[in-house]
Length: 371
Ligand code: SF4
Ligand code: FES
Image 1 (tube, rainbow, N blue to C red):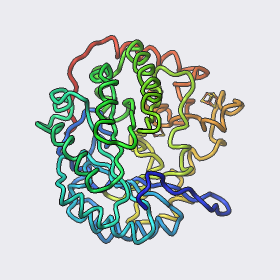
Image 2 (cartoon, rainbow, N blue to C red):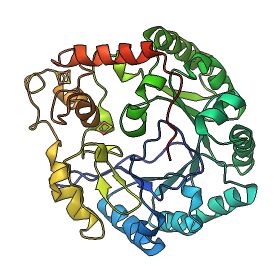
Image 3 (tube, helix red, strand yellow):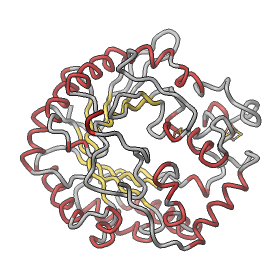
Image 4 (tube, protein in one colour):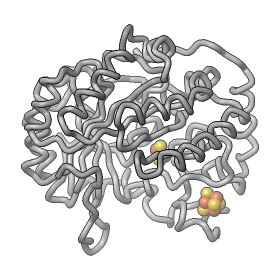
């Protein structure tokens, strides 16, 4: 399949329905050091990583369970020399494969090899439109220039390209230029993701949190650009949590459609779930994927709506947002079962707003790079 459109689910089973998509974090190794990295602050070692054979078996299990799409990610997934073999294994199991990469390790030959192995789609991250600021954020010299070349190679190879830009106080005023850059690179789709504040980003919140004025200007710029580029480039833009009044339907519900696998084989209902200290997640070295999806207590914990406290339990929106984000509830309140404080009905909403305003007003210029 070479279309940008991923397949849609055709079947459901009795009991828990099967997952749609999985995120395979092949490695935590990465040449970049973004200060908002979604990897945990305690990174897995190379020696702990799942082997080629283990991943191939996981892809077989995932397809048997009903998974349709696989996102090959990291860290930097192209740091794994067995990536062509892994792509081919995913393809042999009928999985739609999307490679999420920072691009700096790529060559035209590698891209061609991935395509010939069965890659369907490539997602390239950029840090800014200005090279100096982009390289400063990633702490990687000449990375931005390399990414511009990579985008051209991807298009020349005939692969669909999505550009992903994570935005925060130190690049948000460039949003219009970032959008124009993505269009100039030939992206079919642009994902603009405001930083989510857990893990590394939580450490760096004072240096990354945008002001409310910045966010308002960015929202307007994104809306205008969506019209300007209609029919040429799809722009996915989500208003950031901290200045919203209703939570996002995070992960489309805990254990509902999605799971992530860490480099050493833990299966998570959300890629950031390890930030919730006190929860235990099962390993594919000890259990089958089918058992974890259907029976692991960690997947059951926040599945559906029965676990919800008030005011969610009796709220008319509970089936719509499924209670928002568990990682955010934990990061702000210390209780993953609390109502997401983004919600204006949460008793902790004022706390979240105050924290956002304090962080944005701090003007802290420096962040700690991931290492
Ligand atoms: Fe959603 Fe709970 Fe807020 Fe209702 S109270 S809108 S269910 S987060
Ligand atoms: Fe983990 Fe929202 S990021 S549940």
